[in-house]
Length: 386
Image (cartoon, rainbow, N blue to C red; front, side, top):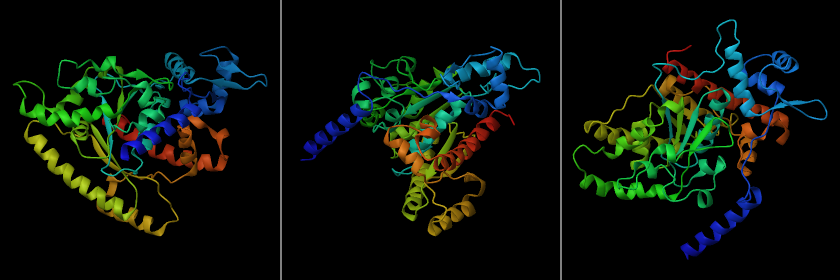
């Protein structure tokens, strides 16, 4: 019966997905207005318009009504142009420099529904919009991040095309560089997921018993795979699975920073308490066997927060009392804008103001920018920047 239900549901989901994104089509990104470009790059609208009028830098497309629009690639090229022609020493491309270590951000929680994948997708896209080179690593076998970034796990991801291909224990292991793929969001690459990742959970116990001298233990394998492509990226965002297995532990050991999402409900907080206790115990064992656990920062992000909900407000107050500055100042508000965008497998950055009520969109975007801006600040401080 369960198998029959699974097959029926899979067929229906594929039909819905095919209606939104036919197998022959690829997901594409909208274009950005001059005002959006100015906000993203950090210059005035008049500066963007002046460059376009003088034919300097990347040139926008012009609509029949005279409206200028830019692709995300144009925005990246505009940053490069501004850097090459700056007179005040300001940098518009924030990429890491000599001595700046790769930032590997693990987004984790023991419980599903805490907003992990939504947070990971929006954070990765925000950082790309800000000019960083980003790799999104989907470690959840359910592959929600992959689907959100335009990859259908059942159709587009074949054998050995997930991270498992780069961390497996047998002779079929392949370079991570051969697995990652560019996305429609220019500057954002993806290592997709599907159920194949469960093979790592199944094979690791056997591999531990058969380990040869000098062979890396399971908790080093993700870090070693990322090291092979580190020079391509500034930030890696890892969407961890909602359980504390070998994949999650490997991600936590590879991470330079940890972001724990928490929905301010008592059951979710109780679950997080168990997650933190189990994580401490298991990472302690990993450390005893040589695992390196050095985080630049650890933060808790309150997600799906309803400001008018008194019990939620009390729980947020409790978290701030207990963890102080470890709780991000900005919470991610519960918003129909994010939910509505998700119905069509889009993020808030993709859908734009025209896709919904402007006031609703603006409130959600303001909350999102506050959260992601705070995280960007932590990344920059880890590199010793203001």
